[in-house]
Image (tube, rainbow, N blue to C red; front, side):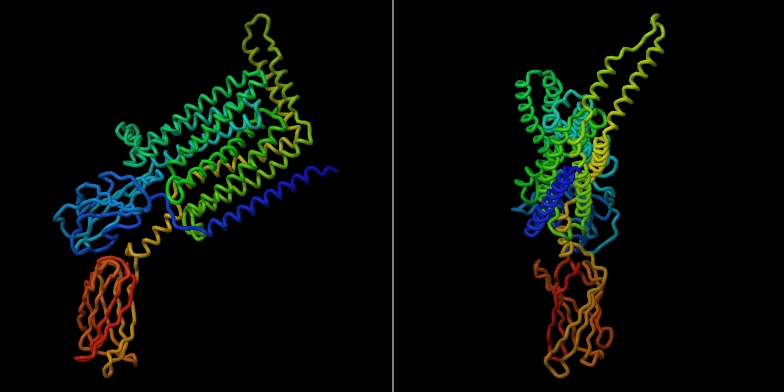
Length: 636
């Protein structure tokens, strides 16, 4: 009876349990100290407010954003009811302290009516954002202004840019993880063709994807037309932006990576002196780590980590996160290719990768928790926002991946208990290389020679496959590693989508701003009841006020009085006023008309902007008996 495997399984189980406990503790500590932050710019306010009605034309329209944005003269357009521009295309920087605010001046003498504000910007994390809203001057009117129905960054160009983004991540994982697997786990892999193809394929994929993103950047953040990808003026403008600089830096680093790969699969392979090879290994490891960290930094410096809460900590954490992903998943793909295409890998190499994968997962857990707290902030955001929901999917996939990896670790541990077929596999390769191809003496039957060569190659391949399949532990490891790689591909796709999704913190901040005083979204009348007492004879009663539809713009006002018995109560005079103290607006007086005993009505009552309004009702029951009652009501 062998106790080795169960003991290793118990050790792995305990390690996984400790990792889960540490992760839960970090989650609790980080979420407990959460404070507001944001990334992925969003519009949090405007002046005039969305849906508001202003008495006179403002001098300018101003927009407030959740983070720094890049704008130009055409980023904010104000369209009149006929669809013509009413602004001067003069961008005004109104930023002050932490407030990110920009405006555009309006032309003088513009007529009353409903105006449409269409805006487009590039957020500090490189993602394009856009939107539109309306406000009215004097009174609302019909409008024929047309704004783009497709959000910036969407359509065919958006899809192509997303594919390029995914390919860039995938190429980085294969390039970095494959090279790390060779240097840290299996140095003999530098001579193996399939391993070389993984690393070189990663470099080619990442280079092509980076070039595609650079060309697509102009239409992705602007017109959305694929033909603009070759606009040289647009490309020049992109190079002056932070994302453009990051992409150019990535290309330069890929040049250094090309040199690294050529040395790894060239001079390194040819070294026979062990001392020289050891020194070269050390140099390649240091140089490769620097290049890999630089490539990872091109994402950290231009995307979510570079803005919002604690960017000075978030960027190096993001670099560590990407390097851990590459070491784990890139090494996993390389191992999978080796197990299927080159069965002669040493058991020690698989064990070394298993240890590296474990520590990579530990780094991923720690950095992932920090990133999640930074972008989510609250427990409710995990289920109430698209970002939070995607994050839960990602966590679930990571859990599946860790579970599958634990099975792989068990197969890896069992490899040490069996004789691996490295020698037999090598012998097969040597036999295949040394077996001569029989060619007829006359040298004319080329077809026969080719057929014999194919038969011999097929026999050798079949023999290699039989040797591989004869080791059940190695077969089991191949299957579990294949399952890991499949989950990893899906995980990488979810991660790519996550990087282009508005973080939960920003979404919640925008929702709170809208719910507070910015957007007129009420769909039912304001209805309040207040007791009053004028102090005179029969001076007590109840006033009921209804404001329909109870939002900014024009409203119908109804007021009714009741005596203590609930019957209609008449009065010589009833007046109403509206005051928005936060904006120093009002009191705006309204004198409703009496329509019946105890009932008054007014039409066209204008509420110019959303906010926390104080509604005051003055009731006079005699020449000298009068009182005013009021209540604060959120309108819009």
